Image (cartoon, rainbow, N blue to C red; front, side):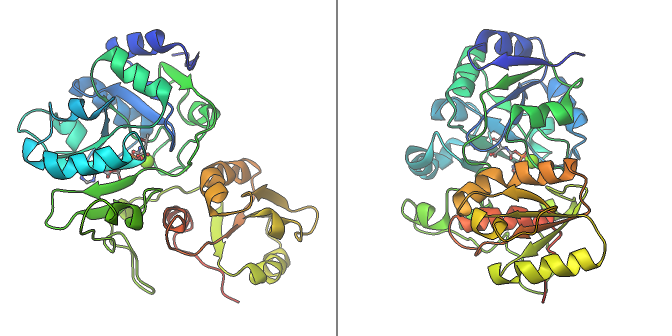
Amino acid sequence: METEILKSTQIQEASDFLADGQLVAFPTETVYGLGADATRPDVVKEVYAAKGRPSDNPLIVHVSGPEMVWDYADIDYKPLAEKLMNAFWPGPLTIIMPIQPGKLSKAVTGGLTTAAFRMPNNQATLNLIKTFGKPIVGPSANTSGKPSPTLAKHVYHDLHGKIAAILDDGPTKLGVESTVIDLSVDVPTILRPGMVTVDDLLKVIDNVNSDHHKVKAGEVPKAPGMKYKHYAPSAQVVIVDDKSDFNQAIEEYLAKGVSLGVMAVDDILKEVPAGIKTFSLGDDVISASRDLFAGLRQLDSDKVEYILAQGFPDADHGEAYSNRLNKSAGNTHYKN
Ligand code: TXA
Ligand code: MG
């Protein structure tokens, strides 16, 4: 199959592919997603096959607005969910709720009695869902285990020949996937940190459990996603938490005779000796989040064996960055 690159105005073409039971990658404000008709289990199964994703890992149902959610989700959750939707939709917050029995296939929910809903903040994709008239499932459009795609060319690299089309709307703005919050438990619980932070959520709802996904020092990660390798390039990623350790870390790795890449903000890159592959994370944790996955992919294609990547404090907007970087590094940190 030849994978077509569609312009962000070619909504009808993209919708026709979906109606024909084909897979279409779509842009969002976070990362590119791999879209398929959420109401057709046969097509949803193709999404898992294209990504090589374990079939017990449920998919997000993408909607063009809150009204589409209530065809599927348990209405009892409306008052609480609407607070979040009003505050954060369209935007990078995915909301998990119990569903009305029989309304979504096992292929979407992974056999759970809940499902994840999200209204992305991207006009082309909102137009696509409206034109198509039904929700679309959308995991990140990468090969399972690889960094999520923030450019159409990343999607093409991983999935060309396996999907019908990519709706190209340029680079994604945020670069890390949505915050996932589970409302089906007693205290709303963050399952994955994103750019909607704990503080943002606490302005809208009274109580949030934000410890669930965290790995404490010296502890083996226990989150479900961690049973798979995640966001991982072929190179070994090593996190450098303290800026002032970079020079020493670089010297040590060079002394081992390995090929090295460095991912950091411009201030640090200025000091890196010539001849080492580098990737700029811009100047702060926001630009670093936006470009993290592109950097991992870039240094991987440069074929380095080790990537020294800058760490940021694990708080506020740094939480999503730290979470993804730790997974890509298998929690490996430089120790001087
Ligand atoms: O920003 C995003 O969320 C992107 C864009 C494309 O929208 N999508 C994305 O999808 O990151 P994916 O499939 O890569 O991640 C969805 C996460 C997975 O960790 C999955 O296990 C979790 O959400 N999830 C989905 N449904 C769930 C459910 N019913 N209960 C618990 N976790 C669920
Ligand atoms: Mg993913």
